[in-house]
Length: 252
Image 1 (cartoon, one colour):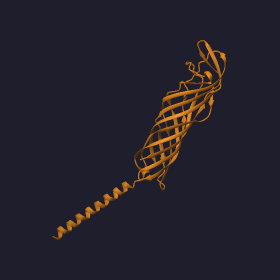
Image 2: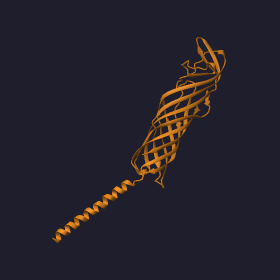
Image 3: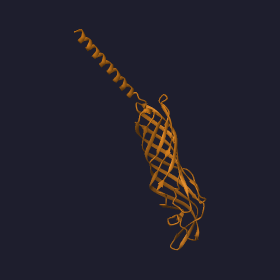
Image 4: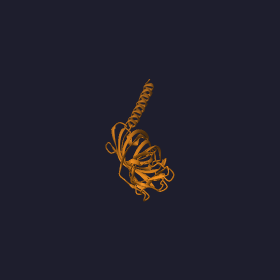
């Protein structure tokens, strides 16, 4: 009888130990810092300022344009401080370009010459940024991070408005080497210009995340998106479009 009671006591002790161990494991899982989670997703929105960097003498920077991006973001952490981040964004950009030469629009055997021509591009892309994200351990409720990567983009919408001063009728001119689509008559016009369908850029950014509650983190940051290829499909004029964005998002 005493032996049976001893065995029962040992069994109760083992069950109690297992219960304490499982409770401790669950408690640790619940209190796992959001910065150390392996996979997470969220949403973001990013107002941006965009501009053109001219690569030829024919065109030059003509002011900042305001745009906006929105979409989803995800990241997969392979250590506590390193993660692979990916996003799917719809991004709009406004690019102002001033043409240095006098342009001539040709139609029906006549050419109208225009001076002080400006082009206002309104572009919309699907962007797929992929970057390496380096982040600190959670300090209080804050996690600081930096990231570096690439953002291939695909043009889905393109509209251009032009401004100019008519001068006189003269020789033939085709603005893009092959297309007679320059519409500057009357000083203003709207047309679709030749812009590269693909855009490649390098992205570099930094920011901070703030834990609201549990696994929910607010994200704030700045990102520079540097275009690497010519966005103008023009034989004479070349330029790259760049942007600086303010990122605001939330991870769940």
